[in-house]
Each structure stands twice: as structure tokens, then as C-alpha cells.
Image (cartoon, rainbow, N blue to C red; front, side, top):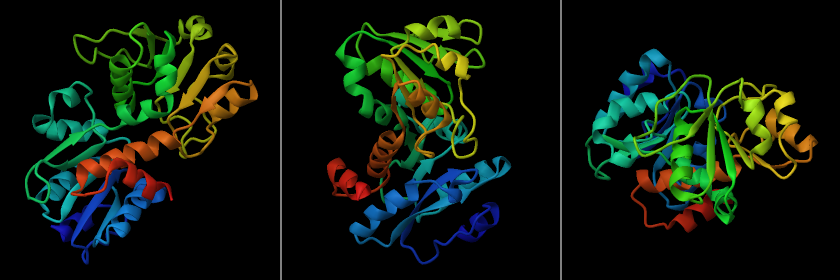
Length: 294
């Protein structure tokens, strides 16, 4: 199985000497994904002969790679990076709990029974983790929240915002295409390029869930400068991207004196949650967070 897997990934695969391994799936996670560093700190502390390895996978190979991982007893599961969160969701949809099915994307997959060779299930820790650095903000008083993007992370974050923030909050979604509802019980207002400019002056919290401005597009911003200038001075701009630390969006917002939050805290919390789902561990969430933060 591992020999076949090695032929389908674009980077070197070094798992032959391990008792078990976990993975992060993406088009190029070997070029800077943070999860292997974080997870491998915990594996080392637990003194396990286990490692997380990045798998660079082309879109035409992702289904075959995932099926090989599911058939490989040494694979515990792992994390899923852009752009495969929705792709993997479709492959394991029948094995997912209902609340995850409503999101339509997963960023973590793991054995239904840990330590056994059976089908993968999955979850989405993006939404839960994204709320961690803004929990007090979204529950202190009624505010207006605008979410940019409706991909895997955007769906998870909007779903959790609607469920776990102040009941009187107002929500707007800005996406290039018109999405369907997450489920019949969720309502939101869709913004487009024509009406975003009219709404943005009233937004208290702006959340970018797109990948625009990441390490692959550092000089780009999901919003043009003329719209950023319309954001009121008391608003908060939250970009879930963690690399670079200050995206073009956050740099522009900082220059205007706006309060900003980057994705570093979200990234480490989702890693903590995903590690717990995937691995058989006696460590608490607080223990895992402490180790990953060192």
C-alpha cells in the first residue's frame, strides 16, 4: 500500500519505519504547512513512533490516495488542507455525523474506531477553532458580522457563528457565486460586488475565510483598498490566514488604525482539536495546546 502511495504523491514519503502515521493532504503542504510541526511535537512528547507527514497530491490523484490511506492499517487519519476539504467530504459523506454533513466540508479525518482498520469518518474543526479568539466579541452585544468566502472554512465558520454567537447578531456573506443554504434552518444575507460597498460601513466584525493573501498570493487582498477604507474605525478585521502573519488585508487595515486578528490562534486550536479526534491519547486539550505552543 505504501509503495503505491509513494507513486501517487509529489513529495518524498518517509513512513516505512513508523508504527503508525498521520497525514496532511493538500496540493503542496510540504512547502510550509504548520500541522506536521505541531502534531509531531506531541508525538515526540508521548514517545510514540508516529509522525504526521505532508502529502502533496494532484487533484486527479486525490481519490486514489485517500482510498489507499483508508486501506493502510498504519494510517490513523489526519488533516486536510485547501483545496480538498469538500472533495474528501464527498468521499466519506455516508460516514459523517449529521452536524458535519450540514457544513459540506471536512478538515480532519480519522478512524471510526481508533486503532482499528475501518472506514474513515471526519469532522470540521475550522468553525470551532475560529470562534476561540473572537468568542467574547461575538457574544458581548449584538453586532453585524460579514464573512468573506463560502468555501470549506467559510461554511464551517458561518455555521458555528450562527449557532454559538449572540442571538441578535446580524450576518452577511460575501461570495463570488450564490451559495445554497447550509441547511433549512440557517438564514443569512448574501452580498455581492455591487452592494458590499453599501453595507461594509455598518460591519462590526469582518472575517476573511478565503485563501486570498496567503503565502501563495501575499500581495493580494480579498477586498480592494477603497472598500477597506469604508470600514468604520471601531470595527475588527479578522483574517483566518496564519502565514504570512500579516496579510495584505491586515496590513491595509492596520495602516487605517483598525484592530486586527490573524489566524495563528485559530490554526493552533484547530490542530489541538484535530489531534484529539485522530489519535488515541491520554492528554487533555490543555496538555496538547501547551505542547504545541512550546
